[in-house]
Image (cartoon, rainbow, N blue to C red):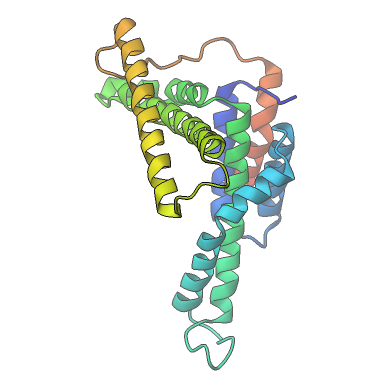
Length: 244
């Protein structure tokens, strides 16, 4: 069973933990304690090792690109004489950067599992609504963000349905080539997305939102003392990194 904390404290804990993971020295105790908080969040979100491994495998080329860029751009001792531009210090820096992105990805996946996108948007508006008095359209921007996040979720669902439909209709014994399969899948996905967007537009207009943006789910209610236990650890860790 996944834990569903208040989105306001979830955003606060995330905002305090991200600077520690991305800016603190990887050799410091603070950074490793931050990693412990990340894996604690993954456990609280019931994030399986299979899901994490499959997600990281998709970023394999990004990690290799980081190693290459840092190896070429960082001066230092050459690894081999044949590799004139790849340095040992650059490879180590690339590994460190990859570890930082790894922790950030696991943290983002954990937050996405325990909090819905619109709840996160509402929590951001809770902290940023005071900026609107200066003429900055925070509400409209966050509404657009929520609309995009919900659209990405629907895109993934439609792609999964189209893939299942293609497998059941065409089967393994389909005589067409790979290009034909991709063409049929693209047409089916585009049709499904357009139909879904049409239904969402009609639903918004029926509720009176002619601008095409959904309202922000405002987060209200009083926070209990137990709710502050979630951002307490990352907040203390952030203070230790800031003044340490």
